[in-house]
Amino acid sequence: MDFNDDITITIDTFSTHGRCRKNYKCHEAEQKISQLVSSLKLCSSLVSVSSINNATISPRIAIERIFTGDHCVNLSVFCGKEQKLELLDYALLTGNSYVITKIILFLQETLKPSIFHHEISRRSVASDHYLIYLRNSEQLDKLYDTLILLGRHEEAAFAMFSRAINSGQSYENQIKSIRKTLYNSFSVGGPEILKWQPFIKDHITLLEQQLPIEVDDKRRETEEISRLQDHRSTSQQSSISDCQTANSNLFVIFPRPTLVGLSVIETLHYCCRYHYYLEDTKFASPFYIRKKFALTEKQFLWIALQALSSNEMWPEIDTLFEYKSWLGNRKIKNSIPIDELVRVLFHNSAPLEMLEKYLELVDDVERKLQLAKELLMTKFAADILIKLKDRKRLTELRASIYTSKNVDYVQQYIDNALKTSTIKWKN
Image (tube, rainbow, N blue to C red; front, side):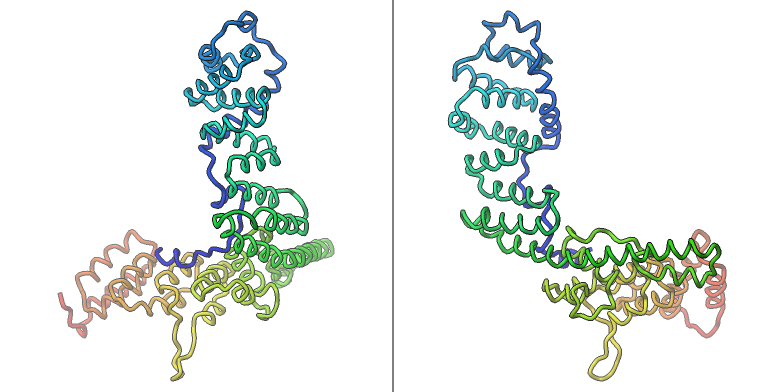
């Protein structure tokens, strides 16, 4: 829907595969190079029979043989710089990730670092393959240094950022690592790097917000599960009401995800689902989250609607969307299109009377009629057509009921309306 674009928030959780990382090429290339990382160890200990007498082999022939499957061609016969660069150029012509990376690693081992990086930097495809290799083999320090040497400072900064958030450290140490990365990698360079500072700071703020909530919720979840296990062990038979009491905790009814690492919008959804009743001064309150991260009313209402609907908290949804005008009349907040609101309620099995109440608020009659048909609210659609005195479409609606899931009383309801003499039909 169109308004989804409006609720997108720029404060989000960065990830290794996030939108802030540069795309180093296709996924297929990464897979091939990843395979090369492990296969090179085996090949380095083998000598191909076909390479015993290849002292006079040319760079072109060597690449052709590697390309056709001879992965252990003896490259040590190419001693000169020019011959090695010929190997690289022929490898690039093949477009084969395995061949290209194999030659790059040969050059890395046999050329001076300054010459190697200079020649790699002159060939963008080669540098991209080398960077993929470093990343897949988890040589993160060398990856960072190479990016700096190539002048790709923004990518270097995000390489360190990815390292910080995927280091497997405790959440507290992860926050420290991200903060260190912020000041070491995102505080130097041009505007293309400095522009990311606010987002990194927001990410740190979000993690600091999530951490105490996660710790407390995990404790409460463990306690509740333990309590239920004790309850079952002491009582072989429980009444239905006892089971309902035992399952009253939302963490048991709706198993929760790990909070740390979720985006701001996902964090809001989590807090709406598990902490909706908290005072707005509490850390885990969704109203506190909204204020702290400056979310708009539309963002808040849309996420709260989905979370509360998932929990079947229908009265809370009414309270969320209804308000009194200065004349005392009850009105509905219009930040969310009514038809989208009704669709969310329908897909979460809201009570029929609730669906009808909100559907009635759709101003355009034809749109209201179409939505009623879409949601299989046939009686509601029939009432619209009766008010319009449209016998033709009412008859068509009656005929369509045979293939729908509506009950017989709706058919009888329409039949009675068609037979009445008090309605002056237009057609």
